[in-house]
Length: 250
Image (cartoon, rainbow, N blue to C red):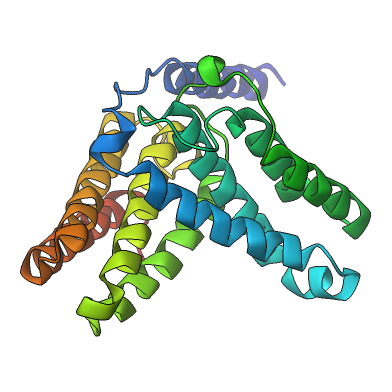
């Protein structure tokens, strides 16, 4: 009994120590949000997801068919709203950000229609609320799993736009801004990765993705297709390098 119990205690102690080490890690100081995502682009993407979520929770059958998508979109809304609340550019959702995040979190947490519908109504009201964003900071507001599942969907949209660059440049910029925000927001989720004790590496990969997406955004708005393509390659490399450490293929 004693021989079994002591090693077990040792394992528990090491596990707790590792968890405490991970939880004690400070996030790196973020640049001003305008440096990687213009407020208007974030608003455009937030409005897109809000409309989609509200449509999905308006009907029980639609919600039943779209529950996984609703959770992913709600977590994305929370991350985008956080960026708008922290944004150095004044914007129509800055004061509403705390309430938007709270409502989006409730939608993401819902497991049955009534709760999702009530949270959807709360989200609608939150859009015009006047809260105090001064208490906001870059912290975990969404599930890493949901954010990382949203990233390739946005990235696919961005790459489709590259086929018609002149017509789609504005949308490419919006998609890039969303990717930059999700990269920045994901820093706070380092403890959900497969290697939470490698937080510094996680931060570096997130920053690399964020900064490459910011280059895409800037080049798209400037109409510089070559620069967009170069930055897309840079972002792809950042993601591949990250996957090699934190999401190894079996």
